[in-house]
Amino acid sequence: MAKFFVPKSHPRYWSLYYRHKLEEALEKGILATAGLIAHGRGEAFDYLIGETTIEPAEKAMKAAIAKLLLAEHPVLSVNGNVAALVPKETIELAKALNAKLEINLFYRTEERVRAIAEELKKYDPEIELLGINPTKRIPNLESERGKVDENGIWKADVVVVPLEDGDRTEALVKMGKFVITVDLNPLSRSARMADITIVDNIVRAYPRMIELAKEMRELPRKELEKIVAEYDNGKILSDVLIHMKSRLEKLAEEGVWRRENL
Amino acid sequence: MAKFFVPKSHPRYWSLYYRHKLEEALEKGILATAGLIAHGRGEAFDYLIGETTIEPAEKAMKAAIAKLLLAEHPVLSVNGNVAALVPKETIELAKALNAKLEINLFYRTEERVRAIAEELKKYDPEIELLGINPTKRIPNLESERGKVDENGIWKADVVVVPLEDGDRTEALVKMGKFVITVDLNPLSRSARMADITIVDNIVRAYPRMIELAKEMRELPRKELEKIVAEYDNGKILSDVLIHMKSRLEKLAEEGVWRRENL
Image: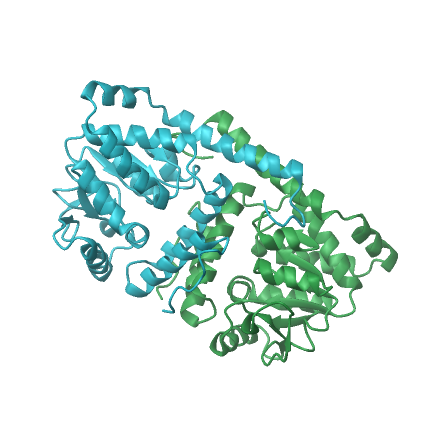
């Protein structure tokens, strides 16, 4: 794999940087090719959002952190895209929340599980990783796709499944888990089915969630409970769609043809 | 590569079918990994459009075919994504238009050029393919990215560059070429810089353009010229944005949370 050589002054520097990370992850066996296509979908929606954390995402993150701090058995799920984009932040977030980490793959192969475990251990060789030898199954999913760890997602009350497949998100909701997702597509099945949907790029969301976890962990339970109770995921998703709509409306009015910058 | 086994009754059959085509193309060396990410971006915008050919795209296709039928040296450019998705249709469209085909790659390697040529020749072993040994260069692009065929894009008056990089589209426009692109992202640099922008999925656009070429080639020049003269790409792009906007607005009003289907 060629080194990443794009100068930081390039207007699309970060987009190209994370693309390169994904291509590296494909080479290392961390990512399935479907993960690259999924990343492209995310890029498109991020572009529509404006490549920034919008207010509805900030509200969703606050509610998510409150719920996670109240949880008895919080678990963060890690897949190939997550390991490629935010390996360090995933570990930090789990620590800030006292949550467990579980490797949980849609296209599960033992090689990919191993490659992801290796990647995470680069950032903390002592980190406990679940999902290496999962013995339980999520009901209503075919065998490989339903495997979960008895001490992880199986017994979790609150799970974070970022960049997750819609059928799996839905199956977890049906199991009675409280499901939090991070997904740039507000219309995806995952986004529609989760209890809390953070429509943001995970490379912005996870660092912000780490901050929030550190800020909010001193709050009284009553206050955390209030934040969760007042949260309305349906309204948040509509607010995201309205944000995108307004942006498109403005661009349509101004015109985009032969325009240098948007 | 595993065989494609999804039943036709699957709600996402076509999306999964073309994803599989792309993954096959990656294995055959036709596609660069960046092509998979680009495909994902396209999927997202197609989803917003509604996975159907919308009126502004139909208008753009008519103007494009009129311009191509009037051209002296029309050329259709072929890259990895095009060869993966519409190899047969590309050849048919070139024939219906009396246009030349040129293999033209952003990440050019001799192996990829060969793999694409092989793929196209499966559909017509006699087909003439330019771009195998390009000797000319588009000004203002670094060496590999600027290579074009003396008898193809170099001398063309009208070029079709579907799923093209923005810098290259812009460089072709600056060379004085009349540039037609097919791009699902109405905000991409290619979409903004081209003379005619067809915002549609190429798997729908090319078959429709073949039909249009056959229908329109009997039209008098005057009539073709009128179609081109009346075409307004700025308005078409705004119409596409308004279409997407209206769809998001409706979804925001109806609400999407926990909704089975959109």
